[in-house]
Image (tube, rainbow, N blue to C red; front, top):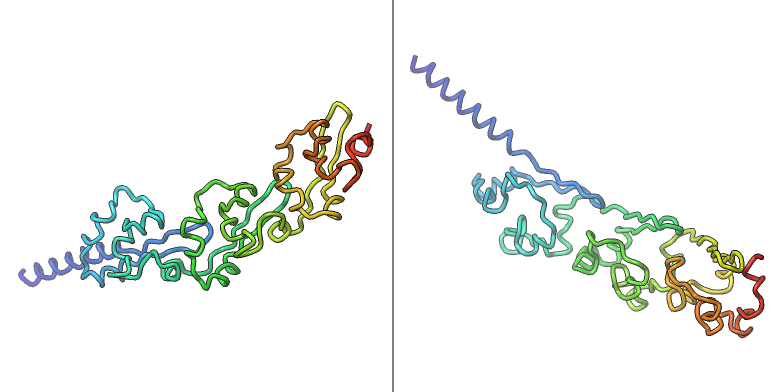
Length: 260
């Protein structure tokens, strides 16, 4: 009877241990533009002598199950409570990202209306920064930020923080460096004098993008409305179509643009 009871107790203990062990699975976090991050319970439990309370619920509330940003971790939230560079490697060290983020970051693809696809290559930029992710992810590039305009980039936002003509080619006018196969569409304007068409293809045979954008025109088609009077005063098309100095004047040659 005593042996049977002892066997039963041992079996129950093993069942409890095995059931507990089943709960200690690796936790996998997936990301849109980078490889997954895997948190190993086994590795951390060995480091902290199987003391679950080091993290639960001092750092993680199992009922809440929320995700933390890297910015929050750098302020000692979540993983950053231990990964400060003292107890363990720091989450703030841009060259340590690969310790958790395994694999290569993916290219980021942007669909730009009227200009096709623009691809941001993590691999080519990491090669230039010596593998330091923090060269960009230090507040310059905000991954959760709404998409910015080219005009905003020219003022130093997002890509424009480096692509300013000093650290790298400027975003102002070097459109084909990022917009591959650039073929801007013909812009058509409806006016009282008939439809007027602006051909990007024709003008790009003579000028560069930077000659017009953004000192004369914003990048968004139709954002700038100009009257013929404005053009005759040197605004909009009149900046070049200026009494024959650079191109035929806006005064009098109406049928060259307005198909009547």
